Image (cartoon, rainbow, N blue to C red; front, side, top):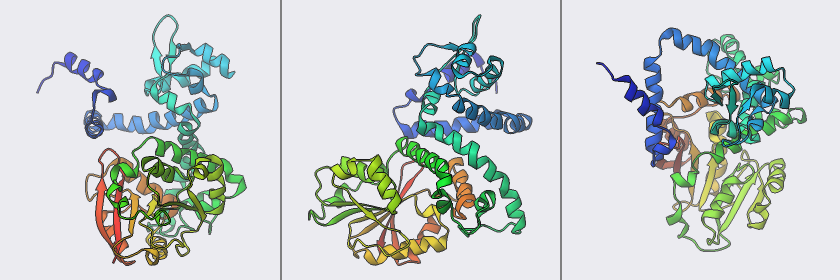
Length: 401
């Protein structure tokens, strides 16, 4: 088979995200394009990329974040700047900065503009990385994840290559020297505040830039079942700073039932400070540990957003066991916003997150069959799974047996 490469190259260069009105189609083409790259790449090129290009990209990203280069580059329509101009704003030696900028441009993070004097300009990506939320992933990778992953091979060798299932004795604990403490307990220590803040910013960035569970599972018809203003409608268990309950209120402003956010005391206090709308919109903020019995009885919707994938099966069962008695049979629904691992053809995002859950928590992502077994072991029936391909997340709907 032969190609007329010039028209093909021009066509490929003309394609971008705005070429698609349907995000599902865009996501499918992205997967196909990534597969094409792998088919074109030789084993030598793959080794060179993974050995040199990607690790050094993480290095350059962290240096750029430290020097606030992405912020200095500004918006996409900001004037392009020379390496010397960027060096002057950061007090870095120009010769050093040029080498950093060269690799960032080669990886499409920033634009390189040829001329008598090479200039650099912002991209949509660098604009996103210039924000505290966007840059949090860079800092998390450089300060924690890279070090943590380096401990995994030794940890697994010491256990005879057994699956970690203890949230207090996973590879993470070996990395930070805190056996007997969960990741979340480590994060709550004052000396680890920067790491905790980074993780919160990263979670906020991921939430802001993906579809809500309410785009995957639409609860409109369920909300018509009960109009009692005193009835609990949504209980967001472990709901962080209240992003989901506020989104729920925004989508259904005329519905009069109670919306309840449950979290640990410190998180509730921070949530009220960071999201004053929790108070003005009438959201009930309730201090609660999901390892204790659920205090709100007979709610229409109990929601766990990316909670159970943080815990191995034994702990996940304890969490479910505390919710089921509060549910009203034939009325209450338990909604889980989670990843579902397919039997084959796993998206690399899911396989990577699964490994991260193992390393951090001794936990895992689960197949649909695994979710079904887990729910049924605690008196629940899986009644539906709602998925949007471009979202990567699913909403699992369960009822009390």
